[in-house]
Image (cartoon, rainbow, N blue to C red; front, side, top):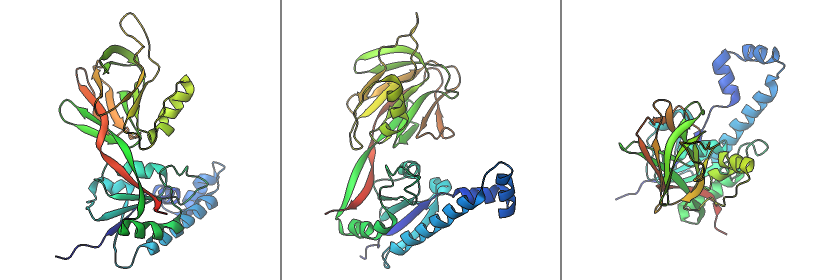
Length: 301
């Protein structure tokens, strides 16, 4: 029985130029809109054209006998990924985080189209490294990092998966009330919410909290633990503020029970509109996910 050739799936998101044209219909209207606000459209157009050239370079790097598909970020939830796919994300680090929850072990190449703008934490490859990386995947010689992901499972079975972090709190980021349990301890809290970060996410939102609070938390991108941080805990006669950080694992999950009548939410990787409602009495278990992101970082030397 013949085996299917790999399929390269190119994942992109609309550029600023494309979003401007979608909003204003023509270049001239978009130019006028920006000019009246002291901004210039030429640089935005140049960046768009450079991005188009990068995508063309990446497409040409795909071996001739491979199948090819392309999907935009907005259509990821409707796209059918298959086991033979090799994902090539061309864009910002957040694009890799966004698509990771739709995958089930397929290798992912992150290609950085603009190193002067993008940090390159997840989009680690240059466009000219794409061909070698794809061939390394096909031959089994690719260097791959298995990056831990976080899973939040509600008591009714609803769940979210995150590559960077999970937020539990109030949708307005005002005071959230809940009970937190970890490692045999439990407290009632009033805070600005809880961030549960992976090693990948430890360089983002969690890092800003650590910087502001002076706390230390060492997590590598492949660490199979999650770091949790309580934001602005408020001690009172009814609430405590001692259980405010820790490292959760598969054997020692974080349990949070809502004490919010309305406005309680759980969301992943900063996508607030894709949230789970977290009303009074609901309980969530947060631990490392069974799935991991298989991030290709190059060919084996």
